[in-house]
Length: 381
Ligand SMILES: O=C(O)[C@@H](O)[C@H](O)[C@H](O)CO
Ligand SMILES: [Mg+2]
Image (cartoon, rainbow, N blue to C red; front, side):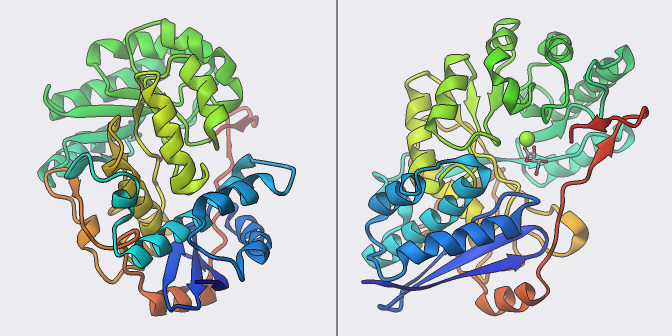
């Protein structure tokens, strides 16, 4: 079998898909994207495709090695995301060729369903209780909310207390059996995060995510050791060596993104690395259906799995959502807050190719908003 063609599709709301065609009629799909830089990743995929076209798609690991290391310069979000999407597509082809779901090729399933969480903004305290109650009604047993909106690096008493009050509201609605995760998005200084973690600890969050931005991860161990709250991070870490550093700092939960951190091949290895630290995998995935399908294939074969992120019902820009480009929505129908394992071959996604080709004509130019503090200074998003 040989790869004959690689195409990319720029799809609203903010995604990029790739389609890898072979001379045997098998087609694989991937989602190579980093939010806000989709066109740049597209260009990277085009360059990497030069190597792949004409080669055997089943040599997934050999291609991963060449694509990540063969260009001498390595890594970063753009290249790692380009490799990630192509890697997903190659695993999709391998599964379809061998007539097996990817999780079977990874050693076979270790679970029948995978717990997922729903996202609730949490910035508006008035709406929070209602939003969480709706997710509980829909069957979810865990939600994730923001710690705060844009905040000063050194959060005020009101900001810290506001965050704690919102988490307390969430805990009240969820009760002691369900879980609440809190995302800081790296918006706080280390000092403010330490204070927040201390105040939030009695509410027993499942984890607190990105208490620091990634470039400050060398001081993460101080936050881990400051209290009992499990720390999660990883959506902005792209390979094993990056995860090794935060695992050494003692994080409890690693959150590689299947579309950023080198795809199925590398996230599988990141999970194994985490296992040796007693840490758990919670793949990041505010992205589209192929990225989520790739995540689920990995977590069905990963013993040290905690919970999966997903974006069902979230409408970035109100243009399209998780189900807009798939013909079979069954793999994304969550029952009692869990995704159910299927035996569909490859990634198990049936892409609506006509919808993809049509949407790509308009494309998108989604960009991260730029936020500012009241004094005019740049604020991290
Ligand atoms: O954990 C999450 O899903 C968020 O931090 C998103 O990655 C962020 O809003 C950028 O898309
Ligand atoms: Mg996050």
